Image (cartoon, rainbow over all chains, first blue to last red; front, top):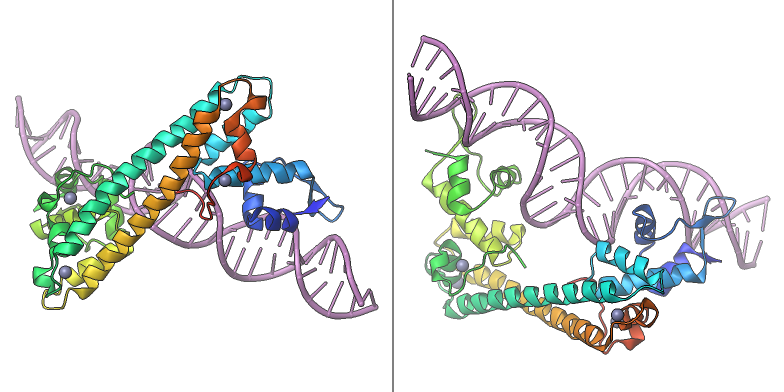
Length: 142
Length: 142
DNA sequence: GCTTGAACCTCTATCTGCTGTAGCTTGTAT
DNA sequence: ATACAAGCTACAGCAGATAGAGGTTCAAGC
Ligand SMILES: [Zn+2]
Ligand SMILES: [Zn+2]
Ligand SMILES: [Zn+2]
Ligand SMILES: [Zn+2]
């Protein structure tokens, strides 16, 4: 039987995060000692490792929930798991594209400013006026 | 004098978002009609456009706050504005790198699965076992 | 002047994915 | 028996908005 701190150390997950995963139903409710402390089996550790690894690969908690459900039913076809992964790949590719466009714009504004007063700052000029940009950026942020 | 809906339409910002920007002190407190509705000047529209454009280029609201402060003092050196932009560029570049590593791993797992049962699914196998990965992914998510 | 209805108002809740704090209790080693 | 690390619950907060309820105001048409 493993204490929560052991799971934490062995998976690099904060203790609060493990409790959070239980709260949202991603981890099963752990058994308890007489005093109320959580105790886990190796399979819980495996599940947590799965969750963490999936997070590192950028999957949302919702996707991970689906993947865990699939993983629990080994006889099914894996088509759905594959499609979740492909969807994730697609999203990552889209984000890269958007970030590369941002990178080009940022590089240009940084390069074109000769570092004089704010009044002539190319950086601020571009931020004030999108028509100085070479690309559209429909999405906000990343 | 412009109503909030006009600012919204002319900058592509949701009305609630404009009020949110006021709440957090990013937009100045707008003047009000006798009935309590917000009314804006052209300069407020310019400021909102600046904020929105900066957000599209991925700047955080904190960075934007600094950039706006600088922009309001045209006599200063623009070194700080440039350094904020360079920092942003650097962050974007780091994110692209991380996403490209994710992309490679995702591509590999998707490609290697021949779409049979969950029990032999390569996607799920990789998610269960990081040692199948070619790269480390210290950061979570993006 | 009066009525309609779109647009405005405040307030509160929700989202994602955690993280941190306060204040208390339990488990374990010596 | 005592010390103290590690556990517990409950709640608040982060970014950056977005949505809805329920009520008021503005402006245009008649
Ligand atoms: Zn400059
Ligand atoms: Zn632009
Ligand atoms: Zn598969
Ligand atoms: Zn891995």
